[in-house]
Length: 115
Image 1: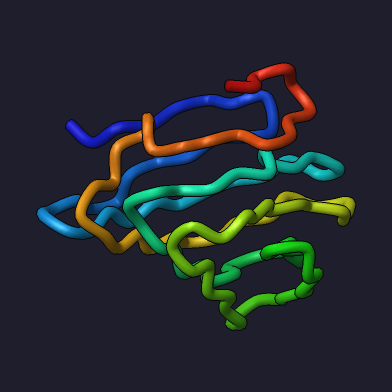
Image 2: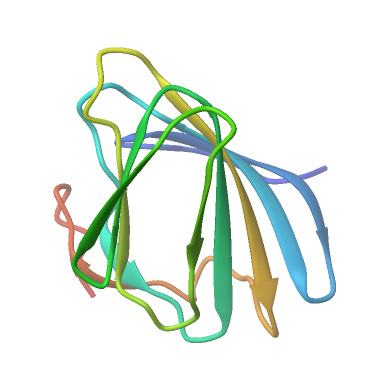
């Protein structure tokens, strides 16, 4: 069975995983955002399915709507935000030597989950 987790900001669901990659569907509640974080072992590619994503990557703000995508290089500080009034749904493709959940270094978090 593939992983799925509820988080304070919404939820994520693994669609597929294999050596070198993991694919997730991420739901972000209106007005919520993920932690400002980095990954040592993977890059990420976000494709917006529904809603509008406000993405912060190394301090730069990028907005993406349905059908648009954003790349997060390995090691870049990044955060996914939903500043809208409807749910944000993205597909995240992780690529790298390791895609485990413990490859998260949080630099800022609205929910007190600092490392």
